[in-house]
Length: 551
Image (cartoon, helix red, strand yellow):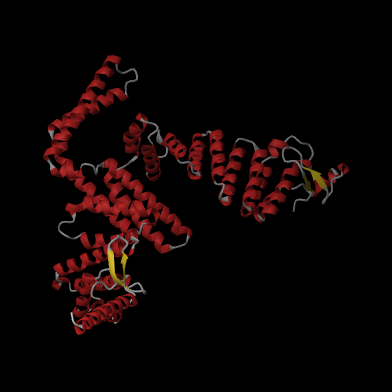
């Protein structure tokens, strides 16, 4: 090889290395990297500001500038839509702003097209609606917080899908979607999602009722159900009416009928796809759903009331009303249902917490709290989940039954459980003081009232008024047989002192009417009595008070 050729080869090699180094430097200098999206997929062309432009950086930047400028100007033209489609197709991970703008764009398109009413393009509306829902999915996919965006999606899914022809065919799928949201978000569930959930639950039970009509009308099914009812009638009313042999006979008949009913149901399900699809959405399922919905609605109403958010109170009260109307209405629950159907189930298994909760919840709503299983069920719920509210509820039931000792026991439990709420402790202490007074234990009643003030001084007026009342009603117990017309008025003088501490002027006036007269004091002056002098009250009241004259 001659010198010229060697020189040219060397030059080309050095130039190639320099160019490679220059290209490497340029690639490094532009700062573009690859990053992982929230779902683990790769985002390309990512700059330092967090924008990921994909494979064709310059084209994407140009389209995005055009798109974002138009969105800021509220220009929702075909060109704006085309720019979005390009970006969403080629770099769906550009930036979260793509989804903020995209959702605004497609929601606006849904709205504007829907306003055309009779002239609206329904296929186009469906396309736009589906895009809104997909954008919520993809925002979670690429930028995280998928649960949050799924909940946001829920606000639109039912609204968009409820009138579509195939909606009712896919009820179980929509139920799973909204149940997942409600179970996950709990008390933070958006009221629009819960509203959709209530509607879907109701629709599913309607579908269940239609699906089981054929099974229930089948003569073989009727025969087995009739046999079970007859057997239950004998077994449950066995007290001396039937012999052991008869009870044994009907127990065997019931077992056989129940077994045959299971076989009939399995055969029916195998030949009826609708029955198979909806059979699980029965009355027991519906009762569970009602309790689940009501628990969330009730808690939200309480939170909204505490925060004085009237709008939220109305929204969640509406949810409860929907549940009462569309779910409870289908269940047709009344006192007989609670006492007989739920009661029989609870009697068979007294530790069944779910049934106990239903008995308590439905009994309160339907005003059936005098039912035979209510108190026992309430205690089962309390033992599993002790709360002061349940302790108070149970105490109230014992008060109705006239069992003051048990009522006191449960009030004491309530006070203990209110350990982090002094105001409630004080309020419940007054209730307990009244129960002590009912038993004639006035000293304990007074001590409990003083304790209420220790818990929360805001209850002082009520507590001191209560103690004043205790004193006012102690005349017969303490002084009725006394021959000392001044001493016997001590309970009224002491009551006045308490009413004064309470700031209760009307009660003070009542006490004054019972004060000793000027004549009483004058007649017994030899005992050292005089207006303004101190006197021992005596009896259970104890302590001293000041002699004052009746006005």
